Length: 168
Image 1: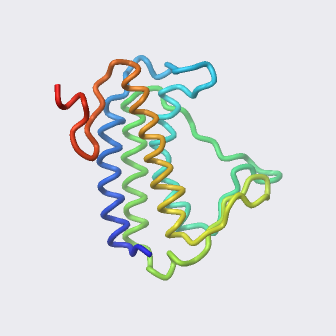
Image 2: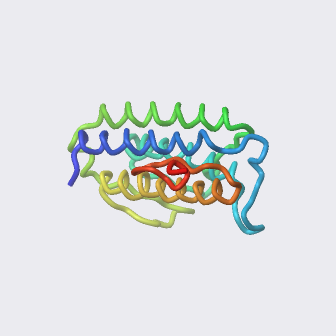
Image 3: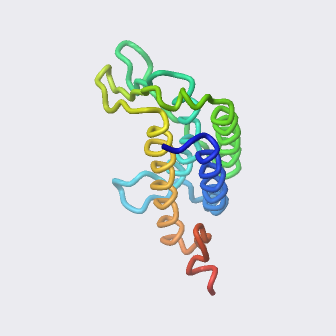
């Protein structure tokens, strides 16, 4: 199991890489879609900007119901500019880093549950939620954005070394 110092180090590295991708979103093309069934580049960017907030929810709540019976469903408010997406991302990253830095190691072993309409989707220790539901999920959608950048002829930043665009 990873401890808080290791999670913070990974978090900082991945958030810096993620910001590099978000900075390259094309202003004026946030409604662009790769396919009619796809989400827009702006929707995916907003989703990525919101994912760090889930780390706060993971540490401060025992569960999250995405569509609680009789309650309001979880929703992400779309942002209409790259600047607004970056501002949201920076706020969520700061809050998530602060929550993780203040967490107790014991809390990472406590279970956390994701539900939809009262039905359990998964339940696992918080450290696993942070790694799988927050970090890996963010990395997945960051890659999604990199494909969208490439399809729009926008240089893809190097994340774990130089990209093909960095070499040219």
